[in-house]
Length: 289
Image (cartoon, one colour):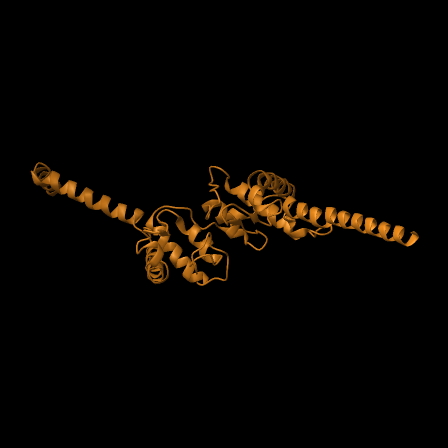
């Protein structure tokens, strides 16, 4: 009993010490710091992912310096000259623009022109991904779309059909003025043209709407949301898969080719036939005389 009283007295004296409060505060800080580190410290998977992203960006920068910096600048700031602009700034265009331009072969551009035509890819998919990661690091911009964004597979059969009908309405309202009613493309002012959409992948169609390459307007998610873009893509795939049922398609270029065909072969044929009748009648009258 005396021993317990002595121990209690010692503890009471230590509590009254000036250092007791400091020791308790330090112990509390140590415990809270350990708990915080255990809860919010990045996992090894996150660290590996961050390191992989950094390596991908560095790889993309090296490729960019070799193949793109001549026109776009070493930091993607763009280059202007006395004769015009070599290449626009890439700050804020995002990886989606890179994937579209390089995935369709439009970039790197071989020769200056009114617009860059689609051609075979110069870089492979891994190199395009690396360059896209570097450009995305220059500033926030549209990311490369995922399969879930460009697909309607999550919808039921009836909802998918309704979405395709809605996509057709959106396409006819926003796209036919340039790309024609079935996406065959067409001529535009100043030597430019709207390309055909028939051999364009779903991802590149989505990226074109998202980034607005060349003279095409930008259809951001505020203008057309992700499901509406996917509906337009599904509509295009549907009409391209269906066989032509109208006889000669004439390139499916609409009133331009159809009007030319009507003038040259329709009215031209009638004029030629009328001329033949008149000439034949004249020869008959000469024989009777």
